Image (cartoon, rainbow, N blue to C red):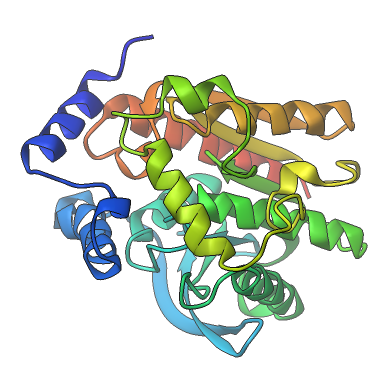
Length: 313
């Protein structure tokens, strides 16, 4: 399918404004630019309505972490979702993914706990893994403060989906069963992964391969065991006993193929998986629904399907 025309206009506008990819500018500029593109471009009318939003703290791997809790409208026990934001392990935070968490909260009818884990290069791998795993366990231990039902899932986009994947695998290995996982265009292999989408979509579609390489270098630091499944969860020894998954990919995304290969491995291991390839979409489209009706339709559909898995319990 051709590139979604609304997203095409977004890419054209960014190019006309002289936007440079993160690997070509300073870290401060990259973080500021990402914030401006996400939170900074949102109008009051575009804020997704939910029941309530509250800033709080959760326990991370190295101490307390900032977090934000989104509660849906309505009363009664709800599932709880621990959410990890994208941004290449380098960019992003609670604000950049505010609307994404609101969408998931609203469409899945679940409480979403967004975790502000430590970023690289200041805190390289495995700091983010330590934070997200510890935070998820902490939320499970304090579930009455959040959704209150026995259903709990993990979710994330891009780098955050990598972390959600790792958390699901690590908890399963410890005998802790999550209800579901929501993986939005996850990056789950190293930069040398051999996938056609890495070449087909290497340049010109928002996230570029050179930027992926830069993100990976910032994240791994001095770490050189790239097949460590905590870093590249596609290299896990087993995919059995993992929670049901909704996996979203984008047609024009260098990460498309590895996510779909991961879905196949889950299915082969007997895991229930719904795979939705966003036709005409680019990486990052989950925060572009305000510009693209087609993107918003996929956001609503997949978030609702994730909710169905959570509410089975």
